[in-house]
Amino acid sequence: MKTQYNKLFVYFIASTAAMGGLLFGFDTGVISGAIPYFQPYFGIDDSVVESITTAGLAGAIIGALFCGRITDMLGRRIVILASAVIFAVGALWSGLAASPAQLIAARLFLGIAIGVSSFAVPLYIAEISPARIRGRLVSLFQLMVTIGIFVSYLSDLFFADNANPDCWRPMFYIGVVPAVILFTGMWFLPETPCWLLLKGREDESRRTLSRIEGPDMAETSLAQTKARIAQDREQSGWREIFKPWLRNALIIAIGVMFFQQSVGINTIMYYCPKIFLMAGFADNISAIWASVGVGIVNVVFTIVALSFVDRLGRRRLYFLGMSGIFVSLICLAMCFAFNQYLGDAGKWLSIITVFLYIIFFAASIGPLGWLIITEIFPLKVRGLGSSIGSLSVWVFNSIVAFTFFKIVKAFTLPGSEIIVQGESTGNPAGAFLFYAFIALVGIIWGYFYIPETKGIPLEKIEKHWLEGGSPRKLKND
Ligand code: BGC
Image 1 (tube, rainbow, N blue to C red):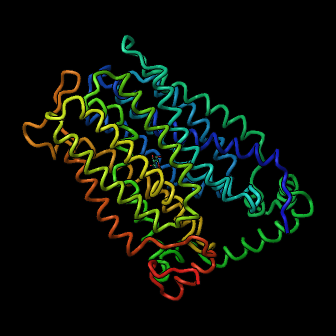
Image 2 (image 1 turned 60 degrees about the vertical axis):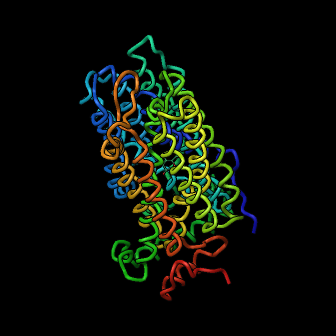
Image 3 (image 1 turned 90 degrees about the vertical axis):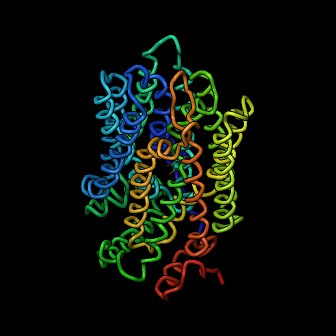
């Protein structure tokens, strides 16, 4: 039966959700263009910069960790509204920071909203959208994250001004705008029918479902949701998810996010202009321009991945992407290793290899990671399983962000240091070789653990785990 739904209302939901994704991406990317300005402003070294970046991630871990329970207690809508307020206050606080310690506190606070929105917004969309377009709307959220990163690079570029040492402040302030849009939009949206039912508010749930799907479909959806809630109550999620039959699913969720983060994607996302300065760009503004290029390539190839993922399949896309990541990281390492001999060409070669690296990431393990964690768990533990996956993202992301400059320093051969704006910094060649090695391990790991879930009904995946099948043997026959 073809499901009817209220298009206008659903699109309103989608655009509001888009703001949640956009904010997540914006606050991921904004720091990169601000670093070259607030670092000299405060006169801080790379390790303090790492702490400022990592503070946001630590906040995201706190947000993702507690958000599951709070969204169940207070409702999805209230939590998203609260996150919009935190986004706005965090943006203002970051811009107003009078010391590095205040900036750390502000980023930690704002990070909570990033962690909350990365979990609560897709959950809200998934629960409120009609089944027929649920997949599309949830993946739209991923695309919006990359658009948010791109927008943040653009606004960094807009405010970047070498003559104004305070120019990093408005880069942060501007984050208030999408937060206000998210808050205002969310204010007019209802709570999800699923949560309302969970709280015994059946009439309200029916009313919301009627607005979304029309009165006829509302009764069917209501009955289905009731059945699902009853099934979920039979099993305790935490006890179930650690049972041996789900061990492989858990390893895949944590493993795929480990490799997604440990190939170093966010060293580029957060420190991109800084890396381009190391590669030989003379001033902050041209380095931020190069980052805008990275932002565009990221969005475009995420769109490409969305169209390929159901055609090429997960495994093929994974191996193709990870091999490309491996090769481009080796090339990037070479560009830096031979920096002194390559002269101006080194600068352009390193830009090209960073672009190639982003292309392979955006078209494979970037979106694949998020997709796979929603596919491999049976319904009764799907929410919990995917929240373990997103929590893993933040944990591994923090580790990588916090250790990048330390790894750069540790792996710099004497004599290979690079001079950036008159100061000697480490050489990232060794760090990129290290990430290349992780990509290689990821390819081998993937051979055993990446499942081909393309076109396979989710119940069949559950049956495969119950029968003790290995991830590699999952087939649609
Ligand atoms: C990752 C983020 C990353 C983004 C870049 C996502 O898949 O989870 O950590 O910043 O891709 O586009």
